[in-house]
Length: 153
Image 1 (spheres, rainbow, N blue to C red):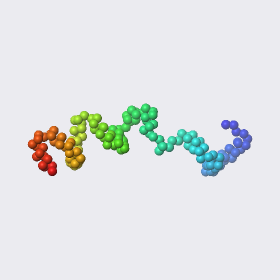
Image 2: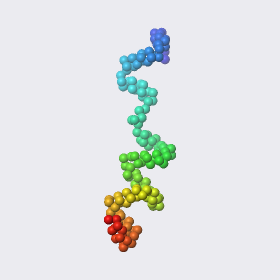
Image 3: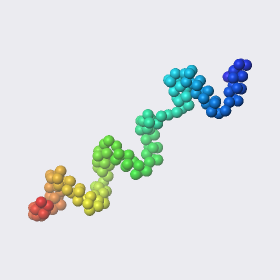
Image 4: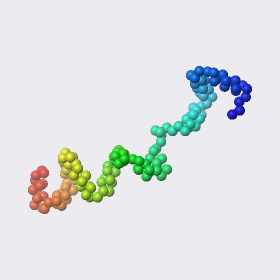
């Protein structure tokens, strides 16, 4: 940057100012010599500032082929929390459940508390009567089905 005699005098006087005086002068110069767009372009974008609220992190990960690296850094709990908090949490849970083998599925149901299991069975009975009947047929012989139906009703 080339500085002529007048510029040097101004800079010397500027350097003699107190810090808050320098700030006020810079603020005055910026707001009286640049438009809002120029200020944003020069001071915000020019410094590499990123407004993270406007950033789509998932898109950035996908665009830069970083899926594996991101997943490797996430704990299983973080992944489950992300999947269960998304707009299609039910489908995610179903896909996860269907992707594991039958023994693990049975273990998951076995890990239910008594009240969870009771709620699960009630929900099956109320919403999916045909499924309950198929399960009963599979588990019991025909005589016991009628006996059990009487007890459930």
